[in-house]
Image 1 (cartoon, rainbow, N blue to C red):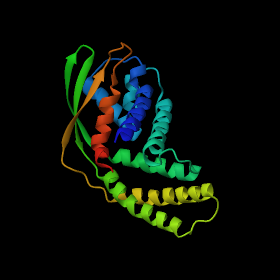
Image 2: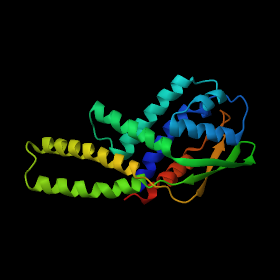
Image 3: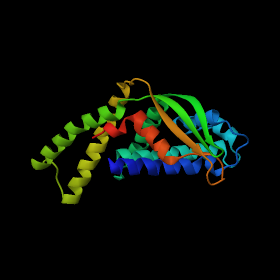
Image 4: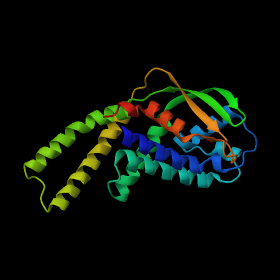
Length: 223
């Protein structure tokens, strides 16, 4: 659980560096800002956020978004295991679609002080990763049995590489199945904190966004 938390916070830190926190805002509406940030972070839709910042173009924001999805794949799904370009692209594309499918509604913003807002976001958590985690248990057990039966050939390192490659290929299929059969839970409300504590422009605080992702993806239930 702690490792998942660290991965999510690192992911959010990358996201935070790419967005309006490093720019100069043309005017501030906490609700509109939050909606724009969520569109960029979850859907790669840069139009709204580009109108609120002056330092990054839509092309730069799109490139950042794509890199951030790859970071999520490497850190959370493949655990930094090296894989080919084709499979990397497949995982990245699938996770992009998963993020786009997330259901949420930006609600009321409350001004805490001149540099801080709390914005309520209603979410409908998805079971994609809970289902995916359950599905992964069976192929893992089967591969261990195959290894014990001597069905993989080569040196210890070669066998490890074969098993990792096979597991990642099959895992993609299972993630795809989990996405296709996904169901959303009942509405929950999470709070995103928007702050300008360092006077460099408002930005979503990374820990609150990490909590948002954990809640909407139900990552705290993944075993």
